[in-house]
Amino acid sequence: MQLQYLTQCNVDSVVIACQSRENLDHTTPDGLLERRADVTYEQIRDADLAVKNVLDGMSDDVLAELQALFWIGRSDSGAKDWETELWSSRNDLNNTTRSYLAGKGWLGRYVLEGIKKTCATLAC
Image 1 (cartoon, helix red, strand yellow):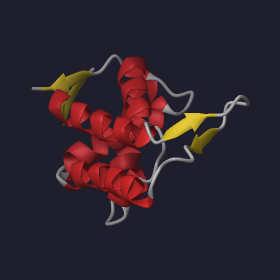
Image 2: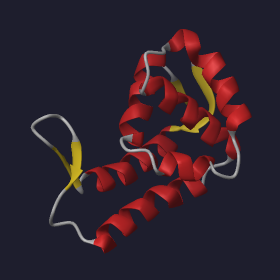
Image 3: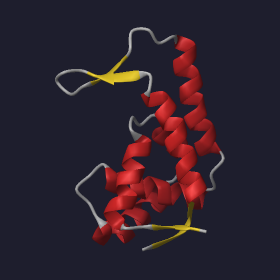
Image 4: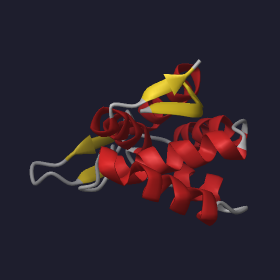
């Protein structure tokens, strides 16, 4: 499946920003995600702002594809659900979409998983 708008550069930017935020967390023995005790408010703010800035720089078309891949990556959906998820993503786009995605833990991981599940080829 060929994406029309989302590029490798877009994905890399999201993943890198999200990884800096995820590095502030650790997984507990029972599998829960927790913030590390040594993390400062400034580190959290800066990491969250980095993710938000990346998303703010994306057009609505890019954001719709990113959100659809995120939804597929975090669910049991796959390539067969791409058109439905993309349609839903485009229809759900509003002035809170960027904040919604910025607030999602593991955004980068789920986008990569969505790419893998759909065998998506990114736009050039």
